[in-house]
Length: 205
Image (tube, rainbow, N blue to C red; front, side, top):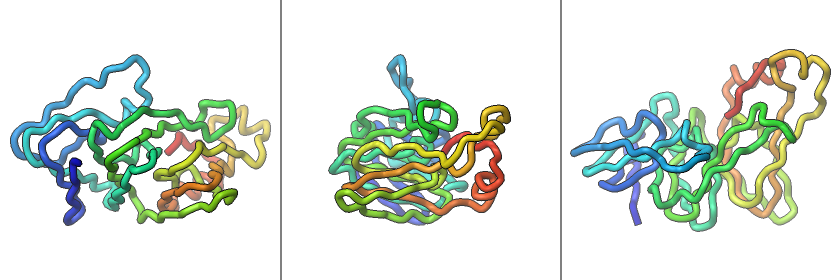
């Protein structure tokens, strides 16, 4: 198993093939070579890239200083834009998650990890919320970090004519999760919270 060492806000990994967020690693010994990710439809290509390293590499993102190590004994679905680093072999596939039912507007990609682990980097502290069988949890899309279990369903309280005509997106977007499972969430930035409250356009997580 490729272990990750977290120290002083950095994730340290040994030589190997890794899935990293763009711009990583922050520092490394030896070489770090970016490889082209093969495939016609790679939904998380914009957020993540393959890096092959020959020595120890250190990953960190100053805009997302809080790190969460998630073991992937059961399949874990992680918001692709919040993934920092994971062994390449841990990735199974990527999915498109719709915050608005039957629409790609405001959708985002989620990467599925089937083994080993993934380290998430977030702007706020992360909470782990377990769900019992039959229990439901509603999460703001911008707060979502990762989850286990089935896909969430998108929900809008009301879509008015202005939501259709103006480029702002509907208000009160929510994702509902159904237990059993576990959901990881981070705090909502005040700016994002105000954007939602005022009905401004939000482009996804």
